[in-house]
Image (cartoon, rainbow over all chains, first blue to last red; front, side, top):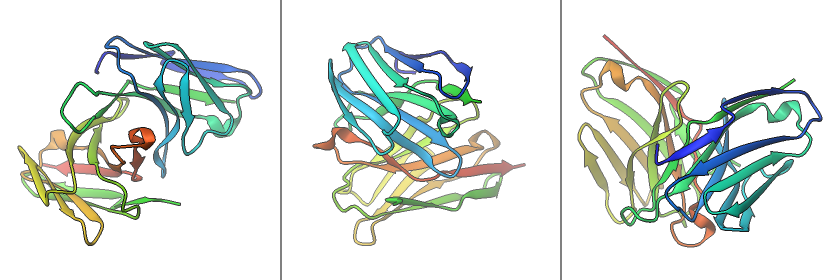
Length: 115
Length: 114
């Protein structure tokens, strides 16, 4: 699992409430990513980070914000959750210490349901 | 816009048979093509990956075939086993610049029957 943990693993919330998901890594990787997985869409990139306080948008960033105040933690925030954000959220790291391919490894996921 | 198109959506193969999953991409700047395997309730796990400077890469029973001119790549699973039953995703990215953001296909649910 490349030393990646996600919390919470499951969450049910109501429309309009703020939600923060946490990704924690223990191996000092520079790059971290947030994806969402939905049937028929595969995985889609929400935001990614290339260092502390350095983040950029992905394909489906609307309605999401991220923060990275230290190397090991990458937070994903839904400021005001909507039902369309019901999904499974995966965090990933880019293993720049491996071979030249810079593989990405994924965490176990967080299942979020917005009622 | 789906930049990586994957087919078929689902696949049933007999034990010992060959499973073939195909992907096509549009962005010629992509230079890294991984395949991921995902079991229910788990995160995707990297299975095998290829760069476009080679036409084929084999790791055990898993082979990627790559056709740069056609902008297509495929995963072959030889001697398919029931334990291979999972969802498979192809993906593509640019290794330099752009943060190695992965663009995924929509997935193929593989079932290997006894």
